[in-house]
Length: 172
Length: 240
Image (cartoon, rainbow over all chains, first blue to last red; front, side, top):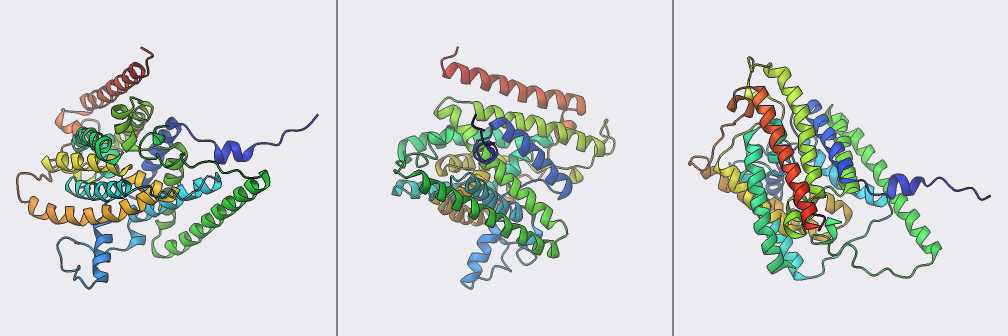
C-alpha cells in the first residue's frame, strides 16, 4: 500500500480561505491594533504626508504649508497606519509567494491606466474629505457606534453604484 | 470568485503554458524560497523598528498578518459593495456585515468599560475606535471614495493587497491615491470653515439615550442588512 504524503502545502499555504474566516480574523486583528496601538486601524491618514515627501524632492517648501501639517514630526516607524500599510503589501506578497501563485499582472490597455489614475485620484480626494477611507471612516468607525461610520457606509454604497455604471460604460 | 468578474479580469485570462512537471516544481520551489526570504527580511526590519518604537515590531507583525489574511481570504470591501450591483452575489457583503457585528461586540465591551453602562463617565475624545466628526463632508467624501474604489478595482486595503499580489494597475492607483490625498487635504482646509464640514462626533449610545437602545439599533440594522443581502443573493442566483 502506498502511503500518502501529508499535503501541508495544499492545506495551509495554497488553499484559499473562506470570506467568513477572513471576516473573523480581520476583526480580531483590528481589535488587537485598537487595544495595543491606542488608535484604531487606518490606511490613508499618512498619504498626504507621503505626497509631501514627494513634493519636497522638487524643492517645494512643505514644512510651512497647512496642507502637509505634521510633516516635520512625521516618522514612518512611529506612525501606525504607515507600518500596517507596509505590512499589508508585504504580507499579501508573502501569501501569494508561499502559495506559489505570484505573477506580475501586466496592464492590458490604456483603459486600465485611466481607471487606475482616475480611481486613485477619486479615492484620495474622497478619503481626505471624509477624513478616512473604507478602513478609518468605516471599519474602525461603524462598529465603534459612530454615526459617521453609518453615513460613510450609505455614501460609499451610493458611490459604488455610480462607479459600477461608469466602470461598465467606460472601463470594461 | 468576485475578483474574476471585474477588477481582476487579468487574473486568470493568461493562457496556461505547457510546462513539464519538473519545471513546474522548480518554479514553485523558487517562489516559496523568495517568500521565506521576504519574510526573513521583514522580520529583520522589525528588529530595527523595535529600536525606534517599542510598539513598532508588534504593529509591523499585525500589519503583515492583515495583508496575509486579506490575500488568503480575498477579502475586499469594494467588492462587497460592488458585487451585489454588478453580479448579484452577496457572499462577501455578508462577510463584511459579519465583521461589523463581531467588531461592534468587542467595541461595545471596550467602550462600556470606559463610559459605564449608564454613560456616567462618557468622554467621546477617549473612546476606542474612530468616533469622529460627521458632516456633509463625510457623505461627500464617502460618495467620491466609492466611485474611485470601484473604478480603480480596490479600496484602500484592497489596493495595498493587490500591490503585493503583483497587480501593476494598483501600483499606478496608489501614486494617484497619494496625489488625490494632497488635493483632498488642500480642499478640506477652506471647507472646514463652511457648513459643509463638521468636526462634531455623534456617538450612538449618547444620541439614542443609552447603551440598550444603541445595541438594539446597531445589531438590529446589521442583522437586517445581513438578511436583506442573503435574500437578495438567493433571489439573484435563481434559488428563490
